[in-house]
Image (tube, rainbow, N blue to C red; front, side, top):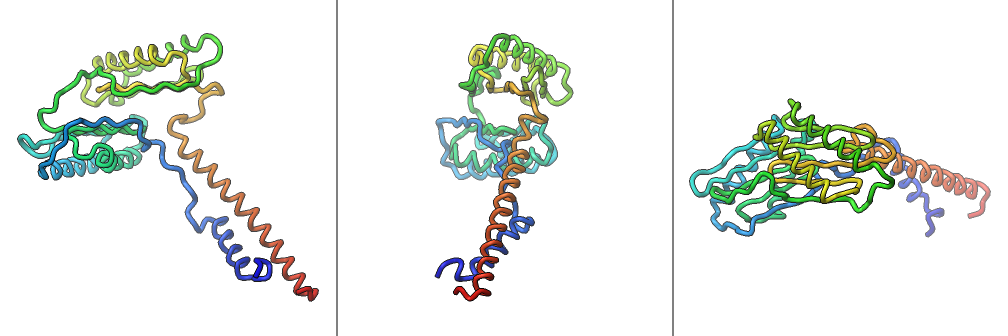
Length: 291
């Protein structure tokens, strides 16, 4: 039996599209950019003692509980050789609620990506977390952990000069910042941010970010965007040829969600109109005795 001959599917689809059109079903939402994985760092050594697993679980619980109150927290769980130190830090421009959502993703990702390693670091777009067992070898705060540069290159001349001015302005913001070693600036279509681990003094933070900036200049050249992550700080930049929109880095989620909602609404409206026409045609045929 065709769809036209059987009115039930038409009625069902009509009701379904009406529900979608008027919001009775949740709108589709994109995953938050803040929780997208940037990189992972996992130690080569693993542990087999169940005590380590229990201690790590307790550590993660502590980090998650604190993420609703602060954007940086460091603590140690357990004692003696089985103790594990860990911390989290959220990007300075995140709300406390978004910070908590970001940090809540770290334990599961750490388990999936690092397994039973004795140390690990999970860097997301909006936050990062790390843990290491007692006695784990320490590295320099300036050691590069990860970098990425866009393949797209800025067209024309003068880009690197504007970029360097933006970098310098961001560095000055770090020195004068009262925002936990975080600075974000926009300058001539460039958006630049830098952040240090919460334990660094303003001077050490500025030196760390300066080192990250220098590596971005060397590694990325004329790339229109780049990110450099050192052990104790990181910086990122992006060039928007058409100008910087409000919250260019953090507004993607909202804009994408609105776009999807508009598309769903448009499809529902067109589908509803089509089915109404089919139903009307069906009724007219019945009235004229053409069945």
